[in-house]
Image (cartoon, rainbow, N blue to C red; front, side, top):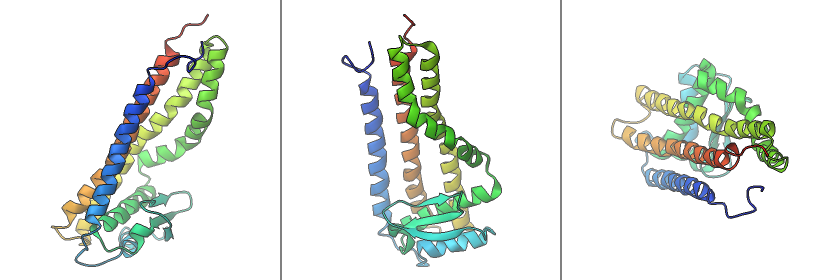
Length: 232
């Protein structure tokens, strides 16, 4: 029988993962909104801070651009572009400065060839294949009488997403640590402001932890549904 044609209790694992991810997402939004109300003493905008940190770090091949949205900030290592969202670019709040500095942390990682960031970039093509073809292959394997080869290929492809999420964790935590260090050394934030920036970045980092937990639960579900089946 193909999974999904009967009551699937393992869907509980997906629900648990979704709840954890939702809690983490709500927490980062709440934390960002809270510290968005705190204007920094130096009143530098997110864009100004990003440009300052890039110059401070000796990075001259990365440009800063504005992107629509809220918390859509990211660093594009392929095109060497640091994109700041509407909520960050022109804001002088502690939360916005922390986010801008964090994205600069990724630019510094890229410039210095940080191992985990390089690894993450290299496995992206595999992850894209896995996200598109893992379930079709698993279903074909089930239809073919739980063909061991197809099932194993599907599981490996599905697992690539979790591997990507696990590799992402040190990338994100390291970027935040770099950001906090630069903000302190460059006197971008005062001693009293740094703890608030740290809380903002910690909340953001926990969304990646939650995503990894949800990914692990999804993989566990796949292993339960397909891994324990024997060939007919």
